[in-house]
Amino acid sequence: MITANTGGMAEYVHHEVNGLLFEHRSFAALAEQMQRFVDAPELAAKLGSRGYVFSQDGDIPDIYTHVQDIEALYKRLLRRRDRTKLVHAEAPWRITFDTNPDRDSA
Image (tube, rainbow, N blue to C red; front, side, top):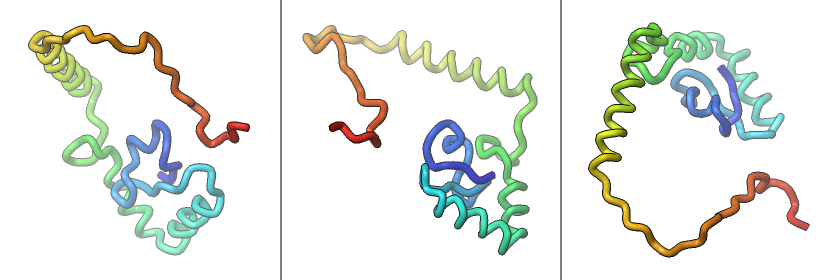
């Protein structure tokens, strides 16, 4: 797998562990990573054998195991939520984030 170093796929692909990342929107960086696979097909095989980085063996878990893991995560979060005491503070009621930071602001 070769993917950009931003976005959802970058969460699943760890550079030189189970794939390669390239600089987002850089065709030169993409070409460089693609050339690595051409020059070293054994690298592609090695990275492909790791597959899923969130399991011990690199395999995608079966649906039953995956659902159990998600349920356990939610239970931990609910326990943490129930133990947390939040204090309401005076603060702005809205915050706006610039979701297109690479565009000129002129």
